[in-house]
Image: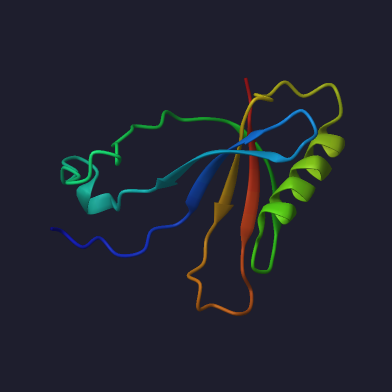
Length: 117
């Protein structure tokens, strides 16, 4: 019953298939605003879970526009190529992040994150 407004980024955990496409299994994460961090409201929907994310080091790339699955897959491939074989990161998932509300037409920010092991 508490409105918290839009948070950014909206983070989608993507699980790539062998061919680089995304599996239908995804996990959407929203940041709980700072005033609610210490005592977040309890979700009334059982499918919503509160999860504490530990600090992480990421490899990231940024791009603009209205991001679609094909864009995230493409930029993930570019990031993987740029990192080469030396970087050690989780290869079974990556994070697709959007920072802007749907009604913002220009100057949009999206990112792909690989989490360092």
